[in-house]
Length: 225
Image 1 (tube, helix red, strand yellow):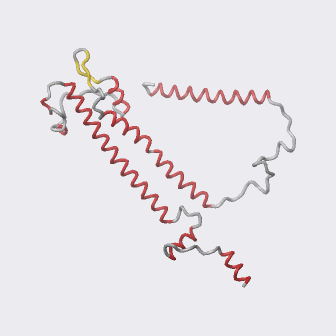
Image 2: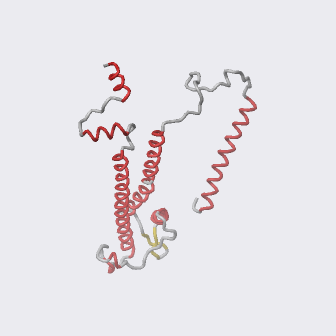
Image 3: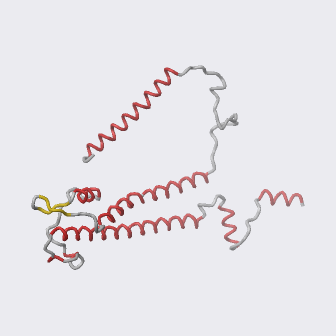
């Protein structure tokens, strides 16, 4: 699973096993199950009731509007998952108890958990820096004059995790604000109302107004009078 070819191989194996399992069960069912077709078994089953009319009916356009709005906002909310993954890894990296550097064979290098975490964050070949960047001077405890490279590298990694966590927070706030603006826009337009004519009439009459009865009831009452 460490390479792209391995991931593709696992996915291909999973899809192949699923397809073979499906077709084997269909073939076994076709060979084993009894075949006794008659008129009742050939009828369309719908909630245990006999079908009435044709199955080709025109649905109300409002169903499609609601479905499209649901798909749009549902897909946008799905983007919260990758953000949560990055935010969780950044908070893990900024943890003071998370080991980042170690001494191995006389050299300072990343610990296996730290190397794995950096790779999960998108760094292909994570390496320790030889000196503190100028942007972090004064922010890292001990500064560039710190003699021990292990605490220095650990401090730099923790500071980078804090910066990444801050960037992710700002990013999700902007994204969620845009999502709320779009939601308020469709709400203001009345796209979430099932009957937009009644909502516009109620808004025009002011807050607390009671919707008028449907046109059919009004006409019947006029005829009866």
